[in-house]
Amino acid sequence: MTSPSDAGMKTQKTNKVAVQLPPPPPQAWAGALLPGLGHLLTGRAVDGVGLLLNTGVLVWALFGVGRLMERLGAPGTPGFAWHPYVAILAFLGAGALLWRRAVTYAKGPRPRDPDAPERQLDIIGRQFVKNRVGVMGGYCVIAMILMALLAPFIAPFDPDAIDVGEKLAGPSWGYLMGTDEFRRDIFSRVMYGGRISLSIGFIAVFLAGTIGTTVGAIAGFYGGWLDKLLMWFTDMIISLPRLVLLLAIVGFFRAAGAQSLFLIVFILGLTGWMGIARIVRSQVLSLKEQEFVQASRALGLTSGRIILRHLVPNTLAPIIVYGSLAIGSTILVEASLSFLGLGVPPPTATWGSIVNEGREHLRSAWWITLFPGLMIVFAVMSFNLLGDGLRDALDPKLRGRE
Image (cartoon, rainbow, N blue to C red):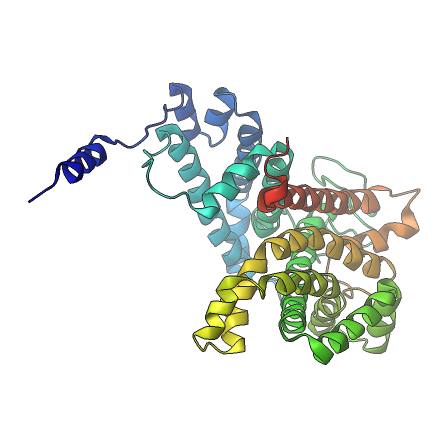
């Protein structure tokens, strides 16, 4: 038999309905025609400008479809044969995501169950969008990556092709960023150079994050002499000037071709893990005294399983923030090495190597150095803004700050 209290509880649960937030104005459907336009017309200026920026990159790429088809049938420069296929996949994927974002916004938010627990990812996302500067930095990062991936669409020439124009010609409609002393198109080299520079930044930071997380987690969890030894080694590496250490290592292990590129990535990763290691260690020292870790030990879980399944996932927030900030600084370090002649060897284009090539013509051909230098500044600034936004969203102490 059902008691009156149980019947009342059932009636109360039945009366609860999902919360339906009001849909955006009809102007939001303009985004289905041009992603970002619907956001802009409904007052969401930052999202509108950011989406229109990325949509503009896709529209720009459409004008290079014929050029891309020619490159698919041509043998091309060794090492660049796979680039057109990457560009096609990036174009289709980015287009689908942009239009999906625009249509989803026009349809309005989904009904939300008031009794359903809110996911941590939803909380972080809601806090992140409050930081409009960080959101704009994220859109700039996406646009920059998209331009690098779509280089076979956008770049009018092969980046290593010589005699494509006049020697040291200034910026014009035919050569947007001018040409260098070998009559190569600077704009094409900057577009393709973004692929190398951004790849070095992402891969080197991933390698540094993996090493730093491993060292910090082991040192913080086990403690004792192992902690002292690992932190002593970490402090010793931090005390060495990074640029001097990089110059010594690169100069000693000098390589050519693709080996030099792998060497640069490997060295940048090996010399950039110390900060992450110290952050992870401090987090693990606090987390290992929590009740869930004590419960895991009582259940007989191994130390490795506790570290991988319980401790490391709880340290991802500061790692993500540190990594987003480190990508910009790593790109800057690679540019410094290239400027000193110890980066990726020519003719492979990176932003730093193009700046290095133009330093002898700073007065007569300033455009060779200016445009790749601006791309470096734009990349570092965008990643720093994105990192600041992620920091505020992931740190519970900063979530309530305006």
